[in-house]
Image (spheres, rainbow, N blue to C red):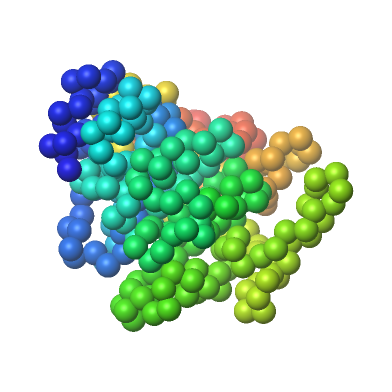
Length: 329
């Protein structure tokens, strides 16, 4: 499909953001993989490429022998108009395949501002906006990230919401999709979603009914069938040293909002501010060790050539050994 896209690029700003081929991008054999993910940060390339969550899942999935993950980002309005005019669908950067050809479309929402970008991408991809209108030929639309903790806002448009840390959950989703496809896709899309609903930390909106109070607040959420969980607990990755991702961060081709290696030094927050969603939903605090941080910094710099490193967390100065971390670097 790249030849069709290439003809449009001379007429848009910053065309390099749509061509792919970044340092450390991973291209897998399409036919050799049984489970195919398109990962999307629903914002422009310059904002989405540095996103740590997407880069982590990108590597975790691509390390699996029969799984591939490619990336897609929101396109700017100039390219969107041309894509609609010339019938070019939403595409991934690695192979420039249509997003609609993948098994799973995984979206990482940092803020609610990405919701409308998701709808635009679905429309460009030719994927029905409403979950109930999709069949087994369409990707399973999975939402994760901080802004997916209250998925009811977008429940009509997604198939699955993942609560909490995604590293282990995406592997479990892949296994379910793999087994369902190997069995010949029995009973269609509803059966696949029912199998996904049986996983820990996975919420499938169509299997739940939401009751509201007169003032619009949610009264309760109850299953509408007996074989799904009453409550969906968040996933919490306790040992960060066991998951040293990303090991080989992507190096952008176009200017991005963050142009440096980034190493997550802990998750959670010690402060407990009630106004802060991130601090509440990422509890408990889990620190990466000094050794683990040092190894990740070295691996990131060696594989990218970046001259700056960011130590990421909700409040990095609150790492219990931050002075030793800084001295060690």
